[in-house]
Image (cartoon, rainbow, N blue to C red; front, side, top):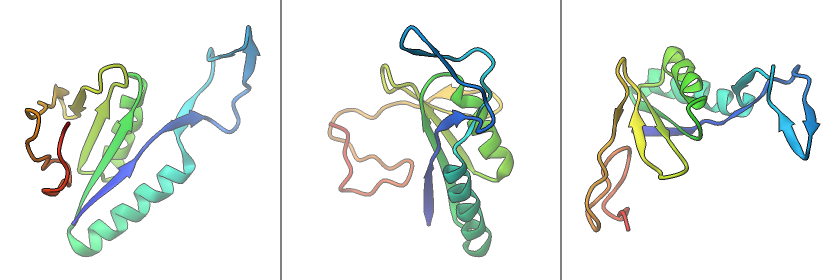
Length: 121
């Protein structure tokens, strides 16, 4: 079984957040994995240990999300993926991050966890 856990970063609950000019001032904010996502990841890892499943962590966002995915990998996720929202290009994180190739239109998406009904359009 393949388990997909979606990961997002949120400001640390103890961070002092200020707003200036209608935007959040990110200076000095420590970003962490959402506590709810961390709980989901922990549960996925428990299932993995019982059943031999594969745990994939997926995050969409800026380069800052790479640190969150490294944490997921350290916790026990097997395949951390990062997608940049501007062009939806995805990378599998390993000691040397490398881009994932996107299959041509109409081919089956078989990674991570796709089935024949899932297709790129």
